Image (cartoon, rainbow, N blue to C red):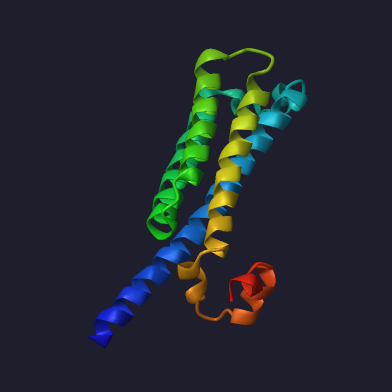
Length: 164
């Protein structure tokens, strides 16, 4: 019976670690997308001169959308299983719909890249929200990853003392 309990705890810990890793990756990918969308219009004049015109192509946009959607789906699915909160997934879906709608409907518009960047920031925010839920979750805080001191994780989370 104890082996079953240890197996279940190990499985929960691997889910928690997966959520943390996927949220970091998803937030990073979304922020890279936001920077790409926000900075690209500013450097469009120099892009052809330095051979980076491919950055303004549809395949780059769609590749970033697919990567962001995959990471969001994986992170928020695992987060939902752990926290039972669908808000992060809803925020991510809204950001992805904003990005896809902009790519499909506003291609070539002066505001296209800025609206896409806004959608990417919304997707990144969903990952930060998911991480916030993980920091305030009893399941996630019950077991810390191997090699991390519990006091260190409590310092990162100022709300940890209130829960005790």
